[in-house]
Length: 216
Image 1: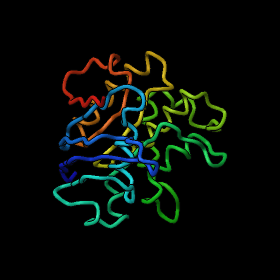
Image 2 (image 1 turned 180 degrees about the horizontal axis):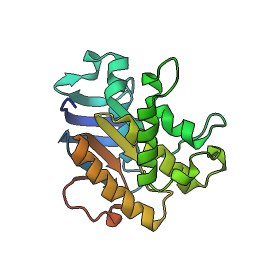
Image 3 (image 1 turned 90 degrees about the horizontal axis):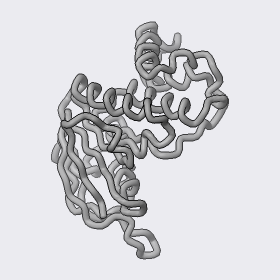
């Protein structure tokens, strides 16, 4: 996978009413690294991810990816590199868990559908997150924690170079929170992707190799 370097320089977000949603913030991150973004409620954590991820988001400062600003990417190219999983992910229509996970490969599917390799890969990651028993269930019948695990599996299957996660463990129980952080670190090391993760649950992370940005 192509390596990426992200530079956020004096990034700020101000609402139309003049309220500061994100004060001037700067940092750098490279492929193979994790940045955990922490801070009190209302400190701008989600606004930071929005400003980085959304191609047309209005903000001050600069977001540079491999020394290129957003305006030097096409919108399609930007979203092929930068993927974000928000806090609130709703199902737009009835769908089975298997189809929800396989949507990670939607852009690569052929006229005959998803390949055997894609299905097997989805099953492997689902098994890693201990949700393979949900494969044939309607997704709208799942608990909040089960559905969140499905969304996490889907974004992992996409293997985007830059992944932004907003409170990914908020619906998970204690065991799954520990498991998620352990898996995330292995995933970043194996695939050399870059992850920015907003979280209040860093105490469940037993890994040592990460960066942290605290917003105040």
